[in-house]
Length: 178
Image (tube, rainbow, N blue to C red; front, side, top):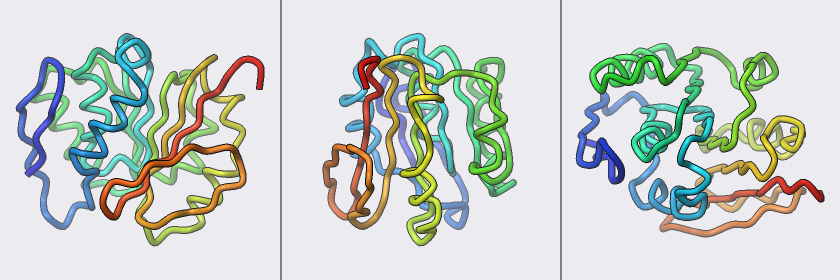
């Protein structure tokens, strides 16, 4: 059971199959929103990559994001997210795509303000992709990219990091001067 913690859907419970994925904890979702801040999240375009249950993107929409693109490789996860969006009356505010994020991200038309990526912890190749991609060319000015991992992953770029239990949350802000 996953409970949304902020915004217009605060308290809404998501009930995905226990085998669907490893959802982002409420502590990490709250930290993500606190770090990004309401002024960035409100009216933002958000990409929730390796979205699983979609809880991160749903939290952002609940807190005022104008749109969210959900991408997951698992068709069952994508179906769960679509169903949840319909139930919340938010299907028009989102796109749900099924496939490999490494192939789909270059094809996305929107320029996100926030990207949150939560790959399966055992897929180290995705962390190499996260570290190697030109986020400045993808994100809007002063946009932020977040990555969640289960162990400390050494990324080459200038990432900030906090640990929440067994989870590491890393992020980077794209400044115009970078």
